[in-house]
Image (cartoon, rainbow, N blue to C red; front, side, top):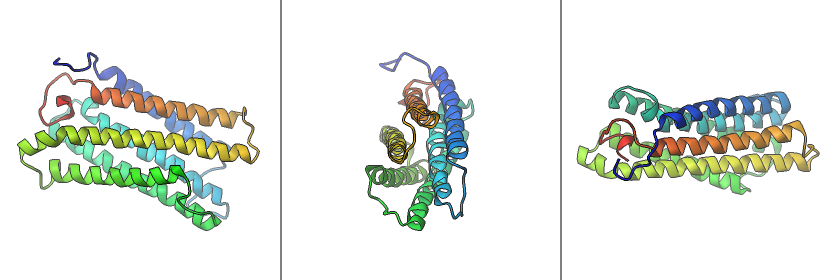
Length: 232
């Protein structure tokens, strides 16, 4: 296998799908059951904020995870997988942008300052880098499309920069969990209560999701394709 990691991606992609489903359920339970629900417009501004973690985890992190694993998850042709990869990343980017919008909306309507925390700084930078990565991939591999030799030469940069942005997104999600839980505990939430445990376990599941996705992306596929992730 020429120096490749001596494991196959299938067990890790399967584990990642299970962890993604668990993370989605847990973040919904947290924000609907413990935090009161979700709202686009409400006199209770906390309900508007609750849309933020839901969209960032389900829309941004999980859809981004599925986009990264699409080359390993689906037994379709390279062209079909490339289209799925592109569309899933586009959905993740749009939902992530909306997730950030709802954080700003909550702050603006609640009289809270924007962009005062490390989480907000890293988050804004991550979504911008994600957008740049998507545009680069679209122009290079989809339309108008670079020459095959150029695509082959820049593929390692595209893959590793994409994984870097993904890891940054996972790290910033952890900052978000920590920031929100610290704020809630400072306002009276029991530190050893069920909600605190749920938030911490959700954060752990997101970390494990990130680990399995990165390993899945780094492991060799069953067939070599010079213009897909299996070449890395």
